[in-house]
Length: 212
Picture 1: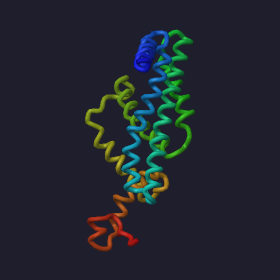
Picture 2 (picture 1 turned 180 degrees about the vertical axis):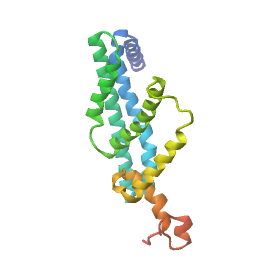
Picture 3 (picture 1 turned 135 degrees about the vertical axis):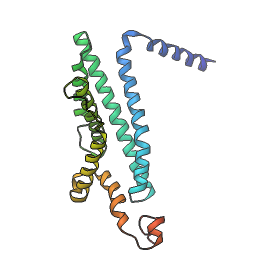
Picture 4 (picture 1 turned 90 degrees about the vertical axis):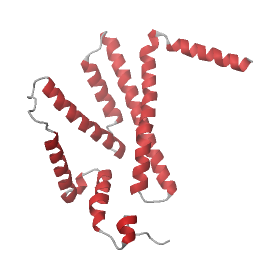
């Protein structure tokens, strides 16, 4: 009976600690680290699985290793960033006695530099993903604050026109400027569809099967 009683005692102690208001800021940082790790793995694993199986060559072992590496890197980096961001936010608030908008910006800047400043494929994808969201958000904020007038017509069709026009122009004439994963996707869609030998690599497969 000592075992179950000990577990109950430990759980009671931990749960009691989690309810202590004086530890809330530190505990929020720890839970942020946990949530960053979990969310990073949930987001990256299916993406890495699909992209690796579709576009990466090599043995199954190599593909699994690449999937695990990408998932681990994304999960780790997001966990580190959330930990850094929330920790610096809490520190600034404690030092100044109140929460300011600048706290969020400065904490995120430091976290971004420390965690996502390393130029690799994972960080590049994350930073570009955020950039697209930022541009949309700043455009909406500029309208909301009155810095630019409310458009009379929906600007989304024009936005879509320019995005697709520019990206295909870059792909056809300056493909080296695009991210490798985007190059692979576009090669599959627009260049691989120009080549076939018979019905097998016209409808069944993208490229002819190589005999063992």
